[in-house]
Length: 221
Image (cartoon, rainbow, N blue to C red; front, side, top):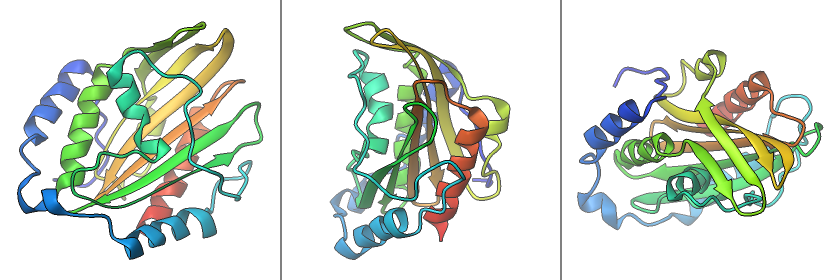
């Protein structure tokens, strides 16, 4: 596959990609198990060398927990990797943390997951299908976030270092309060990089792009 980011923004595109990638995995790679050294390496990358943009604390905190549970299973699926619950098939290493930003309620969740063989590609295909099926996130208590495609500048981030990207920006209300969330899932080689940038005052797409670029550089170091 030619290197470079490819945004999968529509239901049709997401579904077609998922279908085309469904046969990429399987076989001996299903028996892959997490490796302690590889896992420790990912933890070190996220905890000891965060190299984040200005305005974010370099102190890694516990993995992010979504402040609500979406009713739609597709929406829940796309949030899981950033919380440290990436797809398990052929997973060889995984680490997840969160960092605080200086805007109101700002937080970024980061998950790294490495896979045997071409399984990262297959998993991103499945996540693309789930993203296409997540048009809005709702939960009881007044939470409703509408999804729309990532803006073009954010899609272009990491063009030289990543292979594929899926994502959406969600805007609306969390339990009645204004809330924003950018969800980005990227494959770089055998690694699935997951990022959720959220905040109460709003989320700046340019800032999300800076975060994504920083995390991709960390993952490839």
